[in-house]
Structure formats: structure tokens, C-alpha cells
Image (cartoon, one colour):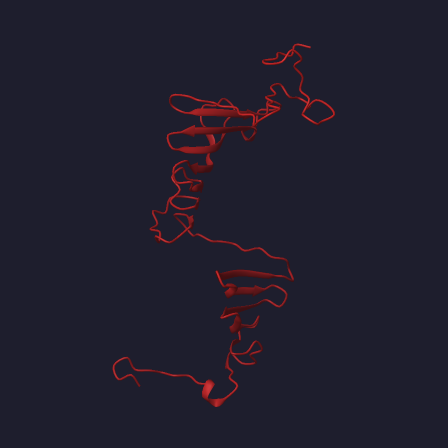
Length: 220
């Protein structure tokens, strides 16, 4: 059958515990007593190409590279003369940072559409960058909530920015409770989730319902 065995006199493609061959498998590495390893080692890096030869489409050639201190996945054009999509997914081997669209991720996850030369806060773990308009989308069902939640070790969701697609309203949560509400018509409620005017302040007592204007010089 043309199979070649190293360390065995009966080379086959059967998976341990399986009932048959892995369809289409050309190389099978198996260790029945420990983890099986495959190592690619080169002086200037290592590369693994994954190619579908059924057609001449740029999207059918994937490449995994380890070069310098990064590992990256790219797509290559048909004749391998150039990258079709470079830096699709990148990981810094020393930092562990992951980049999408960049080969030098600044933070744990760095998504770059184009280089905006933006400055990042030292405590930032997620960067989304573009040289033009930059947006983050939160998609939800037509009757569901879309949330950005703020939690700590003692509390889940103590702070929230929340959009309710069922009634097209938005609310802001602090200390686990809704403090400000914006209705679909644009009415704003502070202390209430049913404002009937453009701005409603609601409190349980006169002392808790007020607007204060303070002069920075006089304090009054």
C-alpha cells in the first residue's frame, strides 16, 4: 500500500481506539505512551503552509510562520509571491500579546484596521485602532439587552451601560441599580425609568430631589 513506518513494521493510519483510517491522511505521527510532538526548526524561523489545490483562489492558501519573536497566520496569493492578507492573527512569543491586523500588538488584544499612531493607557488590555473612525459593536437579539458591565472581586455587574432592544431604551447602572434612564423618545429620567418629560428628576423625599448650580469661586 506504499505506507512507510518508522518504529513500526505495520504502518497504518488508524487512530488509537478508532474503527478505521483517517480519510485523506498522508502523514500520521502517533505515540501510544506519551504526547506526540512534531517540531519544525529553522535558523531564521519556521513555516507551515496549508494549501487547498482544488482551485486558483487567493483564499485557499494559509500560512503559519514563526519569525523573530512572533507567530502569525496569514493568507498568501496563488504563486506565493506576496501576502494576500498579512497579520490575520499574530501572537508575540515573549509578551503573549495577540494582534489582529498588526505584527506588534501593544496589549493583550490589539485589533488594528490601520495605524492611527494612538497612545494607550498603561492599564489598557484591549486596543481597537484605526486611522479613521473606530467603533466597537455589541450585537444583540431584537428583544434582548446589549451590555457593557463593570465588575470586581466582590460584585458582578455593579456598573453597567445597557441598551434594551425590546423597547429601544438605554440605562446607566451604578451600585447595581439604574440611576439614569433614556427612553426611546429621548426623555431622560434620573431616579425613574418612566420619564414623561424631557428631563425628570425623581426622589422619595424633597431633600433627595434637587438641582444644584455652584459657583467655582464662591462655592455657592
